[in-house]
Length: 177
Length: 158
Figure 1: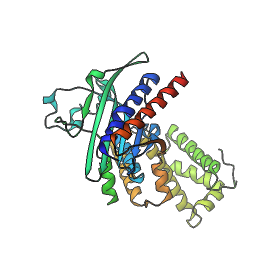
Figure 2: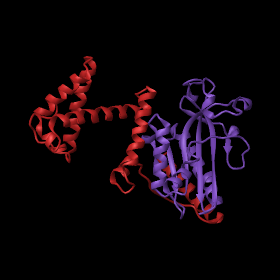
Figure 3: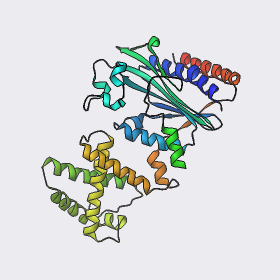
Figure 4: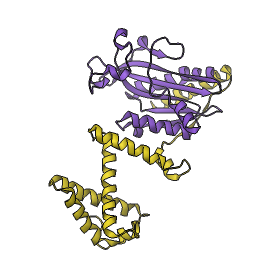
C-alpha cells in the first residue's frame, strides 16, 4: 500500500460517496475506514461510540480499536460544527482556549455544520495525516454542500490545525511498544 | 420485583442478571425519589438479597453476607455513575474525572489477550471488498469499479 493510491482513494471514492450519502439521506453516520499493511479496506459504523458525549472517552476507545485492528491507515468521517475566526484571535492559543467558558462550538450563532474527513497514514517511514472539511447547510432536509469553502489541512499546510484523530495511530504504536 | 424470593439465580442466565439489575435500580430510584439516605438504600438491598440467598451463593459465596452486600451496593452505584458519565447525564466535573481515572485503572488490570478487553472495545468492522494498491493505475481502475457499483446500487434503490 502506498500513500498516493491511498489519497486517490480518499479524494475520488470515499469523499464523493460520503457526500452522496449526506445529500441523499440528510446526514452521515460516524464511520471509519481502516487499512492494514496489505491495503485491505474495512468499514465500521461508529454511531454507538459517538453517542457518548465525552469525546475524550470516544477517541480513547477509537485509539484502542485501531491498536487492536493493526491498522496502518484510516479515514474517519464525522459530522461536526465549525466556526471561522480571525487569525490574530488564535495566535499562541490552544484550540480549547478559544471557547468561552464551558461553551461548545455548537453553542455559537456563527457556527457552520460540516462533514469532516480526518485521515492518517503510517507505514514504514511514511507518516502523513490531514483533514478535509466540507461546510454544508441543511435547509428543510435539503443539503447544500459549500464546495467553494473547503478547508483542507495536511503536511503542506502552513496554517495551524488541530485534529483529535491525527495522533491516534501514533498513540497506538506507542502503546504497542 | 422481577426476581422472585428464594428463586434460582445464575450468572450465566442473561434474564436473571437483567432482572437483578432492574430490581436494584428500582430500589435505588425509590430511594432517590423519597430522598432516603445511603444507609436506608443499603438496608433495603440487604432485605432484598437476604430474601434471595441464591444471588449471594452464585456471586461471592466465600464472602460473609454483610460484606457481600456492601460490596454489591458499591459496585452497583459505581456502575450507575459510570453509565451516567458515559451517556452525558452526569455534569459534575469531579465525578466525570473520577470515572475517567477508574476507567484508566480498569484498563491496567486487563491484559490485551483477555476476552473482557475485546468486549470493552467492541467496534465491529467488515471488509468492503476494496483495497489500496501500490500503483495509481490499479487504484484508478478499482475506484471506477467501486463508484459504478455504488451508482448502480443507488439507482436500484431509487
